[in-house]
Image (cartoon, rainbow, N blue to C red; front, side, top):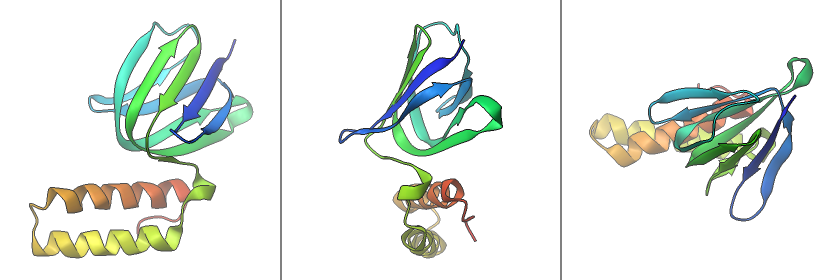
Length: 132
């Protein structure tokens, strides 16, 4: 038995397929969904969604907020801002991370800069480029 998974943005379905497990980050922490999971609706924060496929393969998606819904072995990730690794501009993400770090160095309480840094670091992680 497998899960039917869709990652959806307002413009299109970013990814669709079958998976053995889906792992998402909610404001309360990570949650994993397996076939037979009870219905669930939850908010997503800035984090990586991991779709574990058959044969140890994995599809990773950078999600910058949204919702996850689980019902009848279907997992739907809805996000206004989600990116597959191949969609991420690594140079732009590195530049955004550097700018956010500079803003935080000048004002450690700058919550917008902290969120921008979290988004940039997530993009770099999902793209496999690290945050260095």
